[in-house]
Length: 486
Ligand code: MG
Image 1 (cartoon, rainbow, N blue to C red):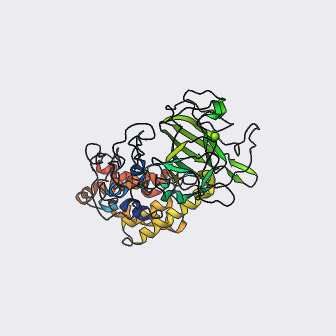
Image 2: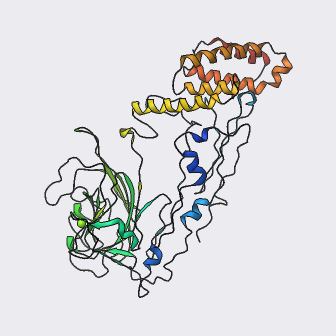
């Protein structure tokens, strides 16, 4: 049994719950729902069971005593970990201590988040989020899978789209790579999909582009042929770009046709193959080319690990794979099927799945450093969310003022700014007139306000010579408070 994710790996929850439940959780489509519930559970793959051999010997020639495996289902894994709770920043008026943060190591990292507004550098032309931005959604939780062994495939991550899991049912996701796209004529043997010579290539029904792809293959244990004639097949991304499959364990060939080469383009950085008959675990990160008309904005890249060893390091794409002739750089489609090659050798495949990847900045992106246009749109989206959140707060409260001020980091609004300036003037006037004992009672709040005003003036949310700022500094100086850490 895989160890539970709770225990010594989990960090202690150190945040302090003060005030309202966080309103931030709904920012970003479906984010909160995703983190609270985990991704939809999927049934346990039957690959392990199907992998059990007919004669008690697996495809690597080893005894396979337990084809069923002992891994928990994805559904079980998705339920583990603490219940997701997002905790808000303390209201302005009581902001003596801002809660820090919670983090949680391990796969069960569904954590509350508490951040401080007006803290890190604000958004800029290509970064829609501030540094350490409390409004930024937490990463979507993905229950990880389990490691494959020579004897049996591991479980895919919870959000993986499984293309082959060892079952006959998963062949529905494949067709012969001909015009008609009829049923595949390869066979399932020992839970693996085995090429039958001269039946032709096969391809997925699914068409997809950018992805993380896992595929595991094994060359025939019985060694026959040499160079390109030994254990040859191929993994064709978009159905067009081949990552070579070949038994090169003890079999020289031309380097740009080696196992894990981008065929005809780039040899692998290393020969990390296991002996023929044993499982080779291939992980690929694929990024398709991005065009703007005839202009190539991004050539597309492929990164490959073979048995955990980096063998293609962000290798730029050149075009559809060719043979003998140099690959012509040319348009590649946005998506295509995954194709496996019939090169006449009974190569086996198992545990094939992919995870679609989000768009890159060059495509507009969804996060991180984005294009200026995408950044602008995202900033306005964030500002609108925050303003809607502020509208739910007590009118005229300092909590509301802070929230509205926060929105100015993302998108200017002269009306809001003028309103906040008036509120700040009123606030400082009130504080300056307080009797000493009352001011002392509100020390934390006042220091926090000074910090916010400093931030706002430093970053241009308010004018640098905004008078209440210096008035408040004087109040604090007169009170003899140390605001160095504020
Ligand atoms: Mg090939």
